[in-house]
Each structure stands twice: as C-alpha cells, then as structure tokens.
Amino acid sequence: MRSPKSACLCLPKVAYFFALFFIPPGVPTSARTADDPLAAAIEAARKTHEEKQLQSLKTQLEQKIAESPNDAGLYLNLARVQGYFADVYEMRKDKKAAGDAVDRAIDAAQRSIQPNDKSADAHSVLADLYGRKIPLGNAMFLGPKFGPKVKAENAKAMALDDKNPRVWASVGRQYLMAPKTFGGDVTKAIESFQKSLAIDPAQDEIWVWLGKAFQKQGDTGKARDAVQHALLLNPESRFAQAAAASLAK
Image (cartoon, rainbow, N blue to C red; front, side, top):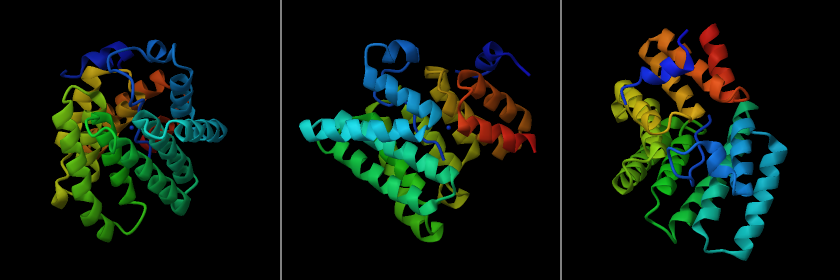
C-alpha cells in the first residue's frame, strides 16, 4: 500500500455526492471553516452524516432563509443538507424517503440559481441532484429525462469555472454513472476525478469516487489505494467504509 504522500504524487495533475461547495478550493478545511460556525457545522455533518446534526442544520438554514429569502448561498447550503439526508435514507435502503429528499434538494438548488445564475457550484450541485433522481426511480424512464439535464448543468458549471474542483468532480460522476449509450466513459471519469483532486487533494469523497472508477475499469489495486486514502482523510466516512468493504469481498 502506498503512503498518503505517494498516493497524491501518483496523480498526473465520492450515494454521497457533495463536498463543501461554497468555500474556495486549495485551502485546508480547518482554515476555511474556522471563522464560520455554520460552515464548520456543515463540514462536520458531511463527514459523519449524523441525522441529528442534519436536522439541526436544516432548521437553522430554514430560519435564516425566512429572514433572508433572496440569499442564494443559504439555498445552496440547504440543497447540500437535503442531499445528505438522501444519503442517510439510501443507506437505510429507503428509496422513497431518499427520492423525496432529493426532490427537496433540487428545489433548493434551483432557488439558489434564480438570484445567482453565475455560480458554478450551484450548477454542479444541481447536476449531481438530477443524476441522483435516475437510480431512485425507473431508470429507463428517468434516464432520458434527467440525463440531458445533468449534462447541461455541468456544461454551464464548466463554462463558469473550469478551475473548480467540485465542477470536475461532478463531471466525473456524470461520465461514471451514465451508460455508454448515453455518454458514459470510465476513462474520462478517472481523468475528471484526477483533475478535481489535483486542484484540491483533501476531498475524501472524490478519492472514493476515483476508487469506484478504477474498480469499474478493473484495476482493483488502484481502487483500494484510492479508498484507503479517503479513509486516512476521513476515517468516519460511511461512504469510504462501504467502498472498502466492497473491495475486500
């Protein structure tokens, strides 16, 4: 097994779909959240997916939105938290609850874009949410409906900020999750995840997604290395734990 340092050097340059979207890339998480208690709480919830934390954040954000209904950032954060709820429900194999949470997240993401159509982060979040709709329902019906929306939102995000690690991560998920007949491409997925990690190597979820892409490509060794690196970054990650368990079978 390579060390974390060597795992980073080997690069040529995540159900959990989100990182901390509203903070600048390339800055350690501790520094990004130190002066913002809400940002720190959202980052903690992302790492653990603890339901009581998520409920508290949801209540706080809804109260803030009632006070500032035109704040695009609040809606984007609410979309992210609703996405985390969807993760929790998917782990329980409750597809209906997960689908309802994704619908609420989509509504919040769309509301974040209405006053600010120039946010690459918001378009990437919305792309990921549209992608989540497909496996939560009838994929044969929902794929043709939401697949083009995923592609369109990612294209908007990329046009707005092609140096954004979350944008590259969302594009990677697009390539990884789509069937070949709808543009799926594992090689392009790996390249996109690597570009995201080249910008911000501290994204534990994206290391897991890179591992999933390597696994789909048939390279189990690289898949294990990527997932182990994710666990070093965030030992509490249920996403990484599940991926590691799958690779150990």
